[in-house]
Length: 237
Image: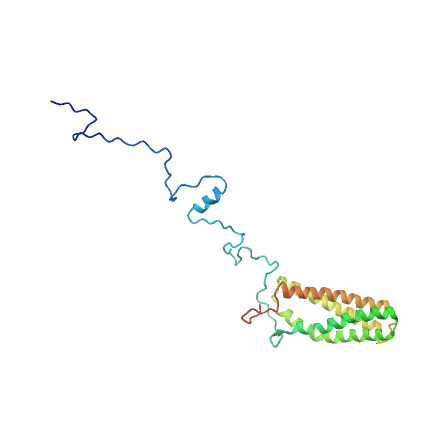
């Protein structure tokens, strides 16, 4: 009778033994491959390896749009570049806003009056006083249609917006300028040399400063708040 060792089966083969565990088994989870090793760029590569992850973050250029209609790099705080929706320019001529077309004549007349005043003070010639007087009168007459057109546009701007507040300051500045020029005309009393040249010139100079401030605010309405600008479809912004 033959002796069969315990390590052999009935067929004479070796008994199967379990394999030892792997020293670094991969953890179960959604990852299909091990995470890259840390080091220079390792964390960024790891973030790309996660499912559904992205290297773009809110606020970075080219990011996904944020809630409220603002995208990465965009402006949603009413700052520079924001557009005031709903503002309408009522008065137009051949598709162009009427108010910007009508402001050039009073601005030119009042600005030239400052030049004539300076020449009159320098030379003392009555001709330049007359030139200045009639330039002021022309500016006041031309101011009336410009003010009407501008006031109509002002009423069409939505209330309680940055554009409406800027328009209010613009209206106050140009109205004060017109009042200063009217006072200068009244002090002069006519086209001849004024009885009080200092008061007449001072009022005209104040009007010029207020006019410059009003013009700057008017440019803010157009170029910053996009008032009276139409889009490609012909709609007012």
